[in-house]
Length: 353
Ligand code: FES
Image (cartoon, rainbow, N blue to C red; front, side):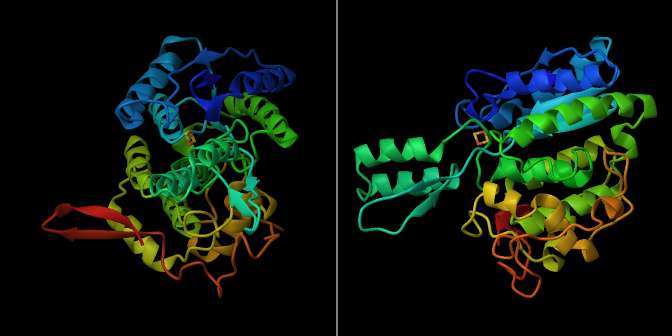
């Protein structure tokens, strides 16, 4: 178990407890669990920027797995750079790998006399309210109160920022159990999911189900389609290409551009929409979203649960059309990203559409 827990990483604050759940699952399946701590990169804490350390984490994970007697790995991560960092390291090492996402923090709401109730999350809202604070529209006392609402529990930022985009991409690639990455960090289902990851990795070791047998070209094209349907973060463009290169798959921003022109944004989540990750989970999570865009997906791709995507999407339904919109009423008809080229960016630039 690679654990990115740290006292200075609020999104990973619960991962020591979750590691115990994973261990229970490993033991139940007849394996022997060991926990290996790895560099934690809390996005809002690490200076000057966590991006400088993503590849350091990837190297650390790869070498932790190479230098110890390990047969398979459960990755406990979820922040913007810990997800791609741990997965990149695990891809390079090539042992059976399952990703156990930290899960999004709980939603909150902000009530102010005389004003309509506002749903409040982290990330996008933090910047929004900080701007209002700078403009004098939100007082110091109100800003301090809002801080408590914006970070209501352990877990990753609950907007469709980089953290949620990356954990969703890893699930779409097939490296996380179906529907697992949107489970709120503080939900009892999250503990059960961590235990299931522990049980599953033992069988994956017996089956020698390695990342190379899951991370095909089709898996990456599925992940890009999901990124577009989610209205995912522009930062994910950097990480998904890095992941693809680790896996030996040719993927460029031109592929992102082409798929973005085909796949509409269906997830009504901040910042493209007005809901948060908890809402997305109750609407059916990623399997529900993928069922809506199945015409754009390679359904023969495998998941760490040993099944094909086609099998995993059988009977899956969207439970709330307001959160995961139907194809005839998208949040945006085009994908989340646009790729531009010109004298300012000859090699290309990626923008939110
Ligand atoms: Fe870690 Fe946002 S700061 S997920």
